Image 1 (cartoon, one colour):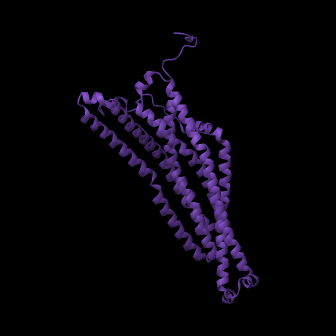
Image 2: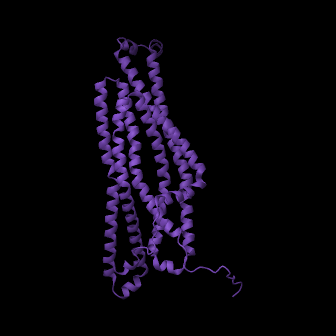
Image 3: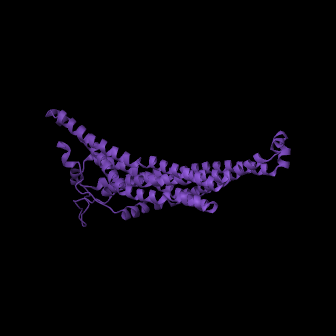
Length: 365
């Protein structure tokens, strides 16, 4: 890479295990435990609403089917509102259940809004603390550190990598809520029809095997992508800072060609990351459609009620939506942890020139 080749890669690159990364990540969340507890509480409200709403929808469907089969339903519909309520108690129950269904969705919306508000109260400060720590650490380094690390790459870590890592705080909280909804939904499915529940559950082992396989690939691709961003920023900063020297020796075209090569490497890294991250959505949509067709086929063959089928269809959406979030969890978490690893490489760095323990302060010049 010509002029940039000597510093395109950190000379002292550290590798951290997943266990170490998560332990150090957990320590950084301790000051914000109050906000995290409130977020967890609002997630419980969301889970209650998400698990209960399909039950009410199935109940309303069955009640409406019974009313539709009633020989006197037309006479009820022609009567006044009070006569409907007195003559047909099922109609009252259906109205109440439908109102409860709407109320649960409003509860879900309110809990989600409060969850986002609490996230906004701690994620920016979480990001601020990390950036201040990195900036302070850079101030402690001696000049040899900046000889070995390009300024553009350091700038990319402080600005871009910290932002990507802060997104994992929201990602993990959302994933925990998705797990609660998934387990609650699965329990209700088994309660109403264990055969259809087993059909639904059959797709889970396959998905998790694929997710586990993708995890290692996503980590490598994410780390390569972060390094490519750092290389682009480094090359840009170095080219601008040294523009006078480049023009003095007529090297503008050579530097432009070198930057184009670095930019092409970034493009390829970005394409690999995009392909890895977005591979799951069409696959999971296909799996969901297959499971839905199987549930409808076997459900109709078993002669279950229309309300139960409606409930299962809604629960499939509630069940696989969190599973889709879990599928995206590993690639996005890998990207965040790769960014965190680059941040820790600065946090854990120590100046080569150490101050003596018995050094005396210079009072006057």
